[in-house]
Length: 281
Length: 99
Image 1 (spheres, rainbow over the protein chains, first blue to last red):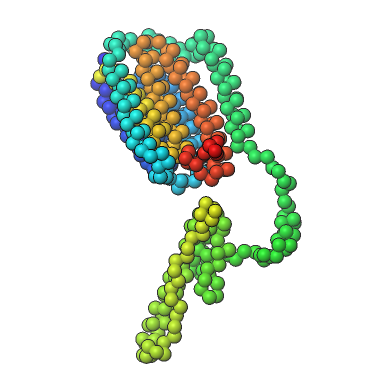
Image 2: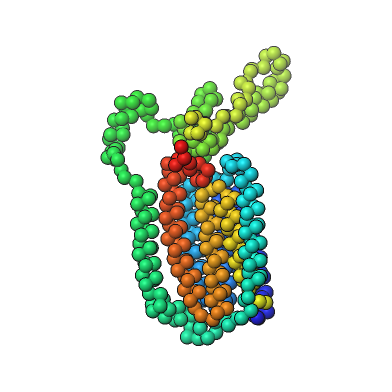
């Protein structure tokens, strides 16, 4: 039996760990899942510390929450933060079957544990007498030294494998600035620089396209990445609406009849987003 | 409190991770579920080590962590290269091996 303090700590940590795990399972965005998993891992680290596995507790924080979760977040950023799970089912009823399988597996596992004879409990005070790290070191460098060396080979293999997998061979020579300029003149599509984004002195955000003299949008003024994602904010409608209001109030003040009032172009429809690659296909 | 409760917690976390692998579609989240399963097994190993009063369980948990790190590195590299060619991290879209 353990102390009351450890029992309290266990129940608090167990709730956090299970909550984090469920959060990871149920959150739609990968970033939220990663943060939930980090919470679970931290609470597990405290569980290790409480159970006398001091070295493992620290390694859990440094390696898992520090290195592995940061690697996960890095890849999430690379792949796209907003990539959410699609709810479309490829196999019919697969999700329900998966939930049933999970519940059945959990029931079996926990029932098996409940039936196991786990009455005897030694505690680590004797094994940790010289210190946890010293005890582990003694085992690693004597009994498990072969496994330890194989682990080193595994890590090197993994590092090289990751480099090979993400490496891209450069097929063509990199074009110089001079060659790019020559190509641009040769193509004769857009010889001068692209127009800058923003509208007069009002908006200079990069996702707001410049307006052409007729109030339409110069799509080239927004960078290609934003265009591809469909993240273009269009202010031309608001400008036209304000202009119409201004004309209206001027006409009211001058007391013009409705027939003599100048016509302002009706607000355009919202800029339709540029189709993504899949839609274009 | 009986230390067996730690084993129940490990079993619960393992179950959640296993269901996550079956339910989720995003390859990165799938990997996180695998990590959760490895963590749950580590918790069980540490608890067993404490029950039996020797450190072999902790050594095994340590090796599990190392293998998990290697696995994550290679797995994430595969995900990145799939994402480069397919523009998607969903496991449903990776059906190129299928005719």
